[in-house]
Image (cartoon, rainbow, N blue to C red; front, side, top):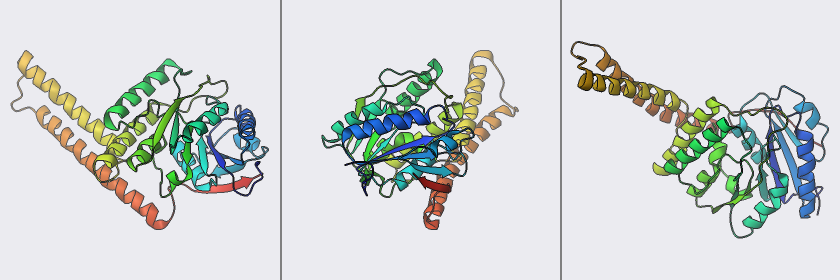
Length: 315
């Protein structure tokens, strides 16, 4: 079997954003790895609003299904677009920066043959900067406390899924990191295996503190879905946590000042400010829950997602 079969066995889904130095070599390695398997396959690249030559280069690659988004909607939206356009029985995901190794695809499939629905890669030997490692390990620690999905490295994009995993699954925010957790909640069997991780050679990382905050808010969302009848959380959750934290810090400072330094609180506005911030933080957080539910319900009733695809190119 080869890539020209009507329905591929494997779909390799890769979001790309400003990866002009990586996409050609990545495509070559994916084709090489898939041909070695002897199974039919398709490769899907999703251009998430690149501003360099990524779009131009991808149009020259074959075989490739190339999805172009109208702007940068984020990696989760790109993955969701890829999943909805994939036709394979097994869907493989990876990053577009050449740090994941396509040569590990057979290992994912071998583990899946043991009866698992999801197999996640574990970058045991990370090839990232110290700051990125710290962010990642902190996120993994918090995820273990809140979700405990049995995955050491949820940030690794190299994963394999059975097609049925994505039936009725819509992704929002930064949810792509928590797909195994969401699927495990639904009863799918999840496993993890060590995979290779290479240092980035071309381009720059897209991860920053803003994505870290969004990821944490989405982590709370998964916890909320797991604990409370699958009701989601998003938009204003981060703002609520920030305001609540400011109120808590102010309250602690006032208590310490009163006990240890004799700071008088009578007829002063600061205790009221602390209480106000705490209550406002809680209200914003609750409003975030309600807003998230309404937003997802809106898109479902409209029969569309929170992004629009400009075009789909098949070479």
